[in-house]
Length: 139
Image 1: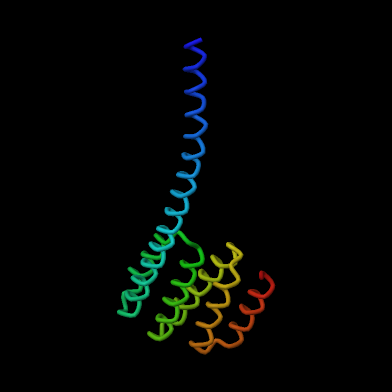
Image 2: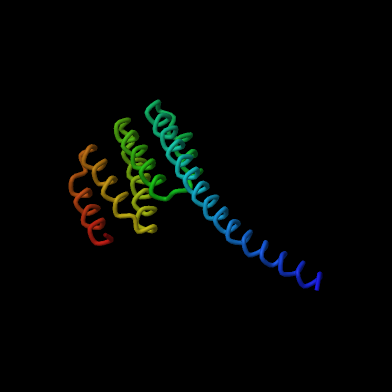
């Protein structure tokens, strides 16, 4: 009888703990996701600042550490804009293409729309229109 009571108590504690444990896992997942997003945005800011300082290679290296595809594509488009300002047009086009490819692959219409805005700023109106239309198709 004592053995059965003990097993029932362990089972009850396990069930209660399982619910609490599940909630803890959910909370930990949400926190980790939030932290990863914060980290991605921080890396984006660093990468863009490096590009603004003319350190394009280092800026591009930093973007490789950005986990969030949307944030990575935005950072790359801003780096491409800085390359265009520095009159490195071929390289700027390569980086714009990479940003578009990443946004397209992750089906992120908002990133594509933001890339189109950057393209407008650097005077690539026709290309921006194509990217806006692509963003609309994905949305």
